[in-house]
Length: 266
Image 1 (cartoon, rainbow, N blue to C red):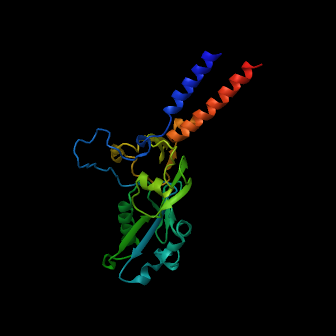
Image 2: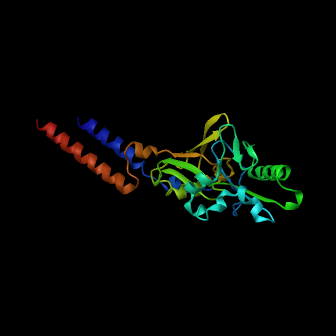
Image 3: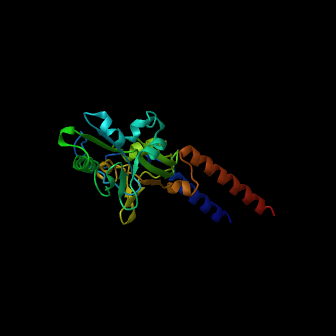
């Protein structure tokens, strides 16, 4: 009985002593021997986003005669729309339907699926000049995504569906907007679930490695789902620090010793 008790105690101490969370688990963008120079220079990869189904576009048309373009700018009819955030843009923007089209005043349906923002600007301008305006109108068309909407779940301090009104957002900014990954979150294997025309795909990115900045998933896209898994240390119920582990070990030892003497005296 004594040998078994000692063996169990040793195994418990061994497991818990190696279960505390270290700096390597929580520090972002570490140089893991992949950067040779003292001055770290990593080329970030960011490709132009191509519009997908359910995206909401904000389109603004300007010309020398402001009255001629008023019909194309529903947002301008309400000065408080931009202040209302995503809710206002949902009602005033142009939603990409299941066929990849938007319904634009006068022009009717315009297919924008798979086009970049710049390409949509040129397409709308071309159609306006072709169907409604003259070349001398000096049109200026601006197209923007009505907020970058994404979802964060798992070991973060603030889960939910979030929206940032920026053209580019990297995954660290997105997580920071959600309150950052908790102490028990796995930064070495963050999952990015991304929408594609043929369905969704799951991608992995190690945010503790500086080369993550070269990943095609470092910059998030609209409708991305970011999922942070718990560390294995949390799964086995170990503490986050050495002090917490010692407290756990002490509690286990106290129970084991008490149980041993109680059973011995029976």
